[in-house]
Length: 268
Image 1 (tube, rainbow, N blue to C red):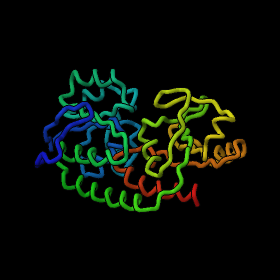
Image 2: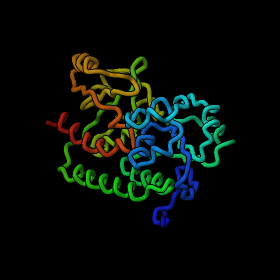
Image 3: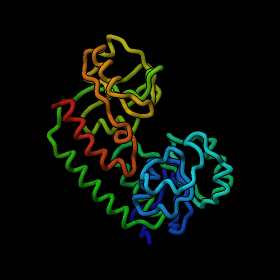
């Protein structure tokens, strides 16, 4: 049972009580994976079509639509006690509609790699998997120490692209940017001040960059895109694994190892 050494408070400041027998619907793909890794797959009664990890467990869990186009009728029929949502990935109207018939909605909003520690403890504490959560946190802390033990490399400015037509990037106020920040890298300030800004290529923009990173999601950039853009821009352009850079929860652990690989790719 939770000893309340880690209060079960979600991103909206709502305190949750332990509910080890909960019926859970997860509308957040990365958290679906985390719940499974904490041994909670038997309590998952619903997930989105984008919840694809771990493949061997999620196929038996009913789909309830996407992260944006949630099927409320299906969720109601599943009678969950808890629904997991995320401020970035799910819509406010979805939250409001769910609140009318779901007893407990757990709101998440990790903004930096180390926020995964509180996330794992929140999930483990609510759903009766404290031991598994602490084991995961210990593994995360060990991997984080390895990442931080490397001598700091040069500060770099990198443009992380998530879409083309229109071209879109990420602002400094995002989980991805803070992942890059663990390497001492920063994203440029763009004229569009939104969290996921649109931008236009220009000589001035490229002149201020050390590299461009093309993410494999949500747009499916490929090595062919990276090769073509590198020839066009004349600076390094790398294809990066979008799951490793943007998925919190379980994927954040190999994500720390991936950051070391990414640093070696750019810095040699």
